[in-house]
Length: 316
Image 1 (spheres, rainbow, N blue to C red):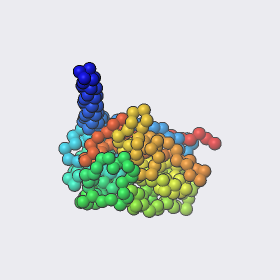
Image 2 (cartoon, rainbow, N blue to C red; image 1 turned 135 degrees about the vertical axis):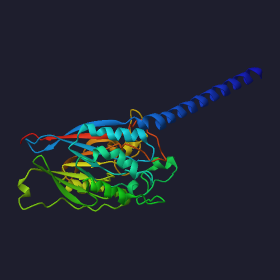
Image 3 (cartoon, helix red, strand yellow; image 1 turned 60 degrees about the vertical axis):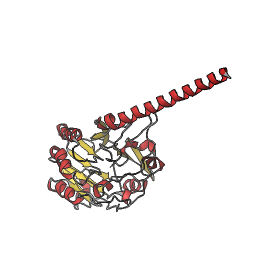
């Protein structure tokens, strides 16, 4: 009996130690993800060969999923510092806000970048406040399309400020921008996650526009496959999106577990090619800069802005 009791006590002690160490490791991981990694802002750089032969390179800065809230000083300072990149164009792919009082802090953070030409589309967290949810539901698949927060955010104020600075609203719209002897043809949609997307096609241009060198760029917040398909069918030469947060909580060495849409998880972050009906188009999905203020964690998925250098294709 004494021997058996001693063995039982030993097993119980080992289990207790194992449970304690597991809990400690979990707490340490959560602490790292919520305190450290979510503020390890990074710049990802990509090169995309889509310009006409002989064209000079263009530097495009993509911002996505800023999810600004008051008092986020480190995020504000980092965003302001991106102006040193001197981009030719800024493309904002939505979800700028995470609080009703965040428009002022957002505009302060983006102030130095608003002096550059820009275009933008909205995400759901430009329209509605995020809500507190069971975090485990995030891993069960996309949140319900059309889900609204309890309060509307001051999106009109943000849109107006962007427009005053000269940024072009691509919400279910198309427009062209002349730059360095090129015509950049843009098309964009309202947030597909809210089922608000209505594809507008590309600008018709003038009677001689077909003779000018041009590039077609499509912009969306959420990269749902239906949207990528109609962009591709419409002749897009580059598609930019956000929304996924890169998976936000990833498994080291494996990657994202979810994308919060129907995009495959291996496409949750980075530059890939989308193929539909025989056409292949570069697709860049940003892992984004922020998180919902109710889920302030990132693991194996640092926040990022993306600097895309568009260069000339090889001559045929």
